Image (cartoon, rainbow, N blue to C red; front, side, top):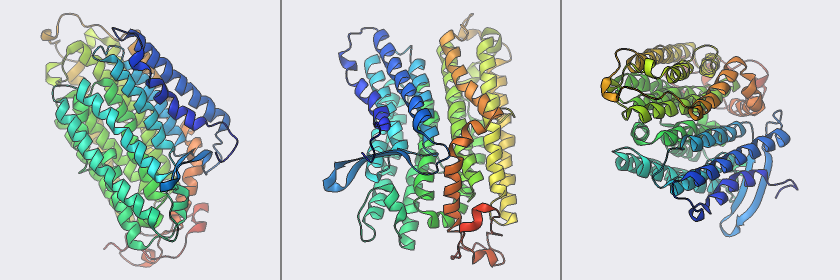
Length: 533
């Protein structure tokens, strides 16, 4: 340990993993005991992380906090190194909330319930480890670990095409993970010293081409998890076949791992390469926004429609990361948190509808508003949040991304075109979401579904409200979350701006137009720049 503090992060990670081990020994025939046990563990871990962060996390501190470092396998330089900062702490809390609610959403799982809850708890710990790992090799190991439970959750409890979707998921994500290993090893062996520690890697001076190649490798690996076009095709299949709890975890947490890792590795470790790649991220973000929105229009499967909506919303994360300033990074993080809550709620409500109607095909569903008025109200409120209705977290997150990119150092022409194209996504999103609501809940009731459909039950109301209440709270008072990571994003933006090229800024026709103004520009230095004609 680096200090005498209690190992809070280690405890938060190991609690669900260790608690999962005795599940096969629990005497239980119908899954009733094991689901209560799993829920208790989820709540205990969530309560533990809330208490630990409330007592020991200082939101005014920009650097790493609650640092825990133990030599694990010294022969290869692998350390059990954990810490949190403003980037990771809110995502750890999001993980705790969504995973605990996913456990509660699994109440009706009666096929191999012990294995199901064992995998959920294992995934719980692995997800938190991804957001807290400060050792490159440890990060790679836990990144790989969380793939296995997701694969099994889809392949065993998924829909008719679950084997295809699960195989596609594991092939995409596992093969992409090799880029993390190769790029990480290249950075670790670079220079006179060898280290997997992320802080030490950030202090090294890399050759220009090594930094660019490492950045490209990380971008491919994390782009797959973030569902960046054209590496996204696994996501609609996975969502289309996964059950509701699985989709909640996929959309609520796993996509956010990609966005978090892009900031942690690509931006923080390789800021000079980020200067050259940021315009590419902006273009990919626009492609994601428009491509995802148009594909959402074309889907008749409810969960695939929401999945393509997620692809579209992740484009705003890329746009915020590409903005070179703290406002853009704030918007990217806020978008990840907001989407984690909203998408989890949408996929859960899709699961509620599926349990009643036994179909996800929108043309086979109609007139549910009279049969399920409470579910209709909840679905409508969540869809309003997804389409960025003012007062909801989706509005403030996307607005922050727009403001961040507007204030970026790109030329006025590039900014104008980018913002106008991104605005197309804002227009398309209400169109396909409102159309989805109209087709599902209005019109004549489809008698093939049966005469009476049960409305949302208290457990389902509780899960949805647990996701909608923070969505509304963030929408009305964004500082609730932004104050957690403001110090970190400001420091990170200053680090990036310290590497901003100024040669291209003075060249006519450059992609960049002027240096940013304000306190954050004091660290900006004179270095070379890419010129895009």
